[in-house]
Length: 377
Image (cartoon, rainbow, N blue to C red; front, side, top):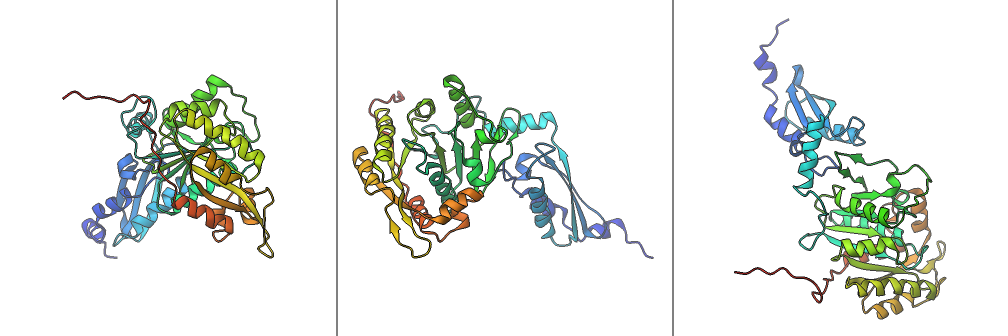
């Protein structure tokens, strides 16, 4: 049997083209390509056009391992001459992890990246009482925005009644990278919740200073990347977490969620008034459960009354952004762990939430009473 010279065996695959293709594969949690993150350790061509790729993961148990491997195989397999792709994984060394963590922070030693110069729109989604569907609204708005091409994050700040893990069907701990947590990814949305850090139904019994520190860490010690929109799911009421968010994110905009019911609208007005007193702009009101939609005849029944959203918007001097009906697909999707925006795209509730997401206003904070930096020329 004639054996080809080594240079003839390898000549059919352009190694640089393969390196470029594999290096462009993006780590879904880091938001960086393998080349940018220093994760492409080695690439070589074997006999018969077999490409051998070695990828360094941030942790040996990286939950994105299978996805990254599949993406590498797909990218490399498209290069002319490659007949098969074999992907091998290694873990980054501690110095490499430290270097990557520092790079992801962008030189920021402390604080968070959502200041007045940030390009991220931050919406704090609030309600006066529990049970009005605030978290469901938040989750589906986030997915709708992601489907519209936005880079979106959701911070579940309801540390006692967290529900983002359930709504998105994700229940694993985040990857920690030398003091920096990587948000979990689901349906195109970056997620962080205290529910990812505790076991099962373990209660969280934090108070004042602990809550403040936790919210600080969720904002500053999570690699959110370059987001277009960050939605913060607040706990109901006017407690410590809401006060902390008002302090840490003065440029955030409030989205108030209520049902048509007078009891829900009245207590939601207190949260809105609290925001206005702190000069936080109110982007608008969303009325959830505006009517019960019959799954058989499509009849709409105002189960919780009428007018709560309009009254709340008028009282806060803002707009009623939309009225979301209560239908079976919206409830079922939440129970199953898939946002209705994905599971039931044609449901009446989803159509309205999609419309609201596409028209979310941007309301700037007033400069009245605000310290301004002056430059002397």
